[in-house]
Length: 467
Image (cartoon, rainbow, N blue to C red; front, side, top):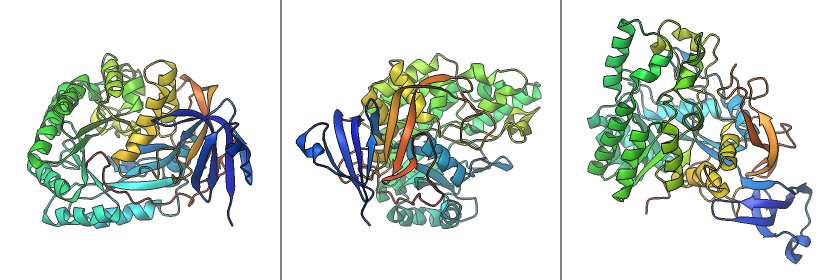
């Protein structure tokens, strides 16, 4: 049975335009836009009409970096695909791209199938997968080709975490060469993990065990060095490169220099690097453990470089790297040894609101907000224009956003399955009011009306910034 939804009276904001328009939705897709008050719009009828007067009508967010149920450091990320995608919906995100993990000694297919099984039937919003390569060899290189054909068109490698996810330069080069051939985009965790491990060992030997030392040993220069090395390896391979969770000014400089040469090099940052700092890592009574993630939070002065990178397009995407661990029982595993604190922060619910606050604060424009949170991640990972915009033919992933509401972020009110908020007590302007996922209301006037299993797996094409 056909259902029609009409959104009337809002300001429609995409990466390209801001228009006062009514939006007509039918069978899960956007079918038309027309100027509010025009004869065309006046003639439309629908089963359900949403009044968006004094509201923004924006595309659902695309969070291209999440880790639901990720095994790490002897525990698991505390959000399941069910709780994590529900929290995403509350925060106006309607598509996540999570990371399936290959374990050393196992095939990519085994890792991917395990993640399909975790997500299938459990997601409140749509989802795709990247593939983490932990064991680059002849077999897994061949598997990369098959995964690209299946819609898993991006592969993450780690220059950090020796003995767990780490790949050496030779393995990285071979994976990049394969990506250059099959169209897959290589995503890089750029930190010199071999050098960092030496500094960790030395810090612990000196009795420096508190969470703040996590930030001190993972030096900005070692992020910049790895970013530089990844760029040069990608040049040798003739491959594009996407550097994840860029946190340091020196790493932004490396990306900017590569882009100034016209190289297909891209960078992502995350809200935690834009809004938090080493001040949080240094909070007393082990509270700093809540803020342990890698790359680590940096001193506040790095934030200006990240905002500048977002304005100049040397950084293109803001994702969350959502990887929550509860303070009680999980972060506490590292009491007395910061290297045993599970790395990761919750944030999938907060990204759209924090970036709207950045609009209010004058860091970015409204269209740039939609560009870095919706349109560019969709293009980067082969989802556009199905996702990331409001246009005829696109999926009806639409958020009615109240730009005037104020809210205070808190663990007491968030929907992520974690016992603290990284932004506890922060007041922001702007709030999600109603969220449609493929035309279905999953949040309706600040009530959850979605369900586990509504979200579908979305196969992706290759990066749309490359020929």
